[in-house]
Length: 458
Ligand SMILES: Cc1cc2nc3c(=O)[nH]c(=O)nc-3n(C[C@H](O)[C@H](O)[C@H](O)COP(=O)(O)OP(=O)(O)OC[C@H]3O[C@@H](n4cnc5c(N)ncnc54)[C@H](O)[C@@H]3O)c2cc1C
Image 1 (cartoon, rainbow, N blue to C red):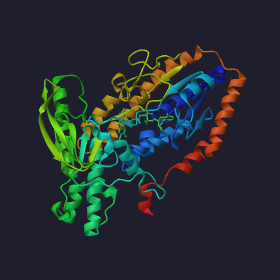
Image 2: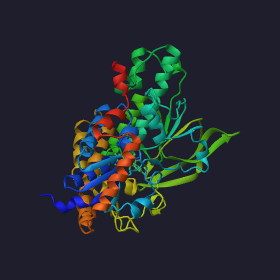
Image 3: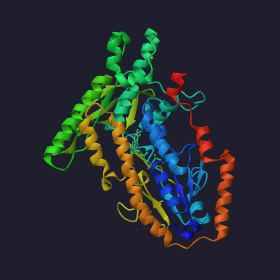
Image 4: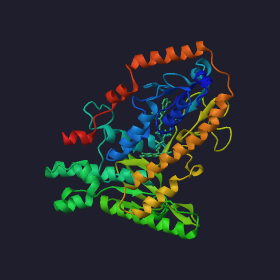
């Protein structure tokens, strides 16, 4: 039964995506009132802007799930309001009167590439993954007006893991798609490329890389192919670990073959090479693996000439002024906890905590499920889809656990006076009116951009 006093608490959630919508729904179902502040029009975070747009089913499923959660009578969705910019965190925490504030703002800011001064080449040779994916996912929209990129032949991608494989796929598809169109007048759509792979598309056309004057792209990874986290070991036994390593290696080579890119293992970037302000290459140093540990061999270096680098080394939460951080990581009261240091009513969930989604602590059923799927469909299924579904299920499980504890904290706080509730209602209503927000459903319909698949079938 819903406790009637629950509606005397207003909870602010920052970020409306996987973890924010999950937390909002859990609280709303229990009768608490929730405001979700979302900096974008749409509350889909990385799903909308980071997951390459060929993952149509996965994107739609995840976004529908968020909609089902946020479209709730006890949730007030406030789009286009960035905490830290439009409302200062200090103001929110001191003056608004929320019982608690929950940070669910994710990890969508790229880690800096560890090369001195390299960031001066951002958008002039250096592209970070989040910016690349944003452009890629939205460039087909008629009113897209963000930065535009052209993937250059010989681009180096620095990274490892499934999202860097998607970056390789994206880059190689762009490169070959453009070359086919410009040199041969052949127009092949993204979905065909993604389904068949670059190799097969070119084989069917009987066109080679040389015919297109291409040499392709290269993925540089600091460890070995077998170390790529593409397959999770079933358990901690030596046998499972070995098997997972073999599968990861196989998968990487399968991707590289089908999408025709080069792979350089055991190498990390050391410094950039520039000439008269133009990026000309990167010097890498070699690493070796000893007892599963990465040992840099900094005196062993080599240079790759390139005018374009894509950094795909992961994301971190964006810092919000007024919150405590240890370097890039939110400072928590205790390790693996959800209480933000220095506050009695501020909590953090999902990727906002570490930028890693707390996956290790939340292996309830997700990891086992993913193992089954991967084993059964090895090399056939889209691994990114399996990984992300599993990842997000883990995040939701973790949020559910955390919300039990956060609810106990809410219950221990004083209930709100009617005047505080009225103030929150009128302030949020003004913010909604400013953006033209009317109802959740109509807003989503209005703001969801045209999809490439719909343009192609028209
Ligand atoms: C291609 C790809 C790469 C990935 N790489 C990583 C990775 O490197 N590291 C990692 O941990 N996970 C990664 N993931 C997993 C992904 O982050 C999770 O699947 C999931 O998106 C996390 O959900 P979330 O709700 O915690 O964060 P997000 O999906 O990032 O959602 C955060 C939400 O908060 C909003 N927001 C952010 N700041 C503010 C603010 N100040 N005010 C108001 N709203 C705000 C955002 O707009 C967004 O809607 C990746 C996923 C994909 C598809």
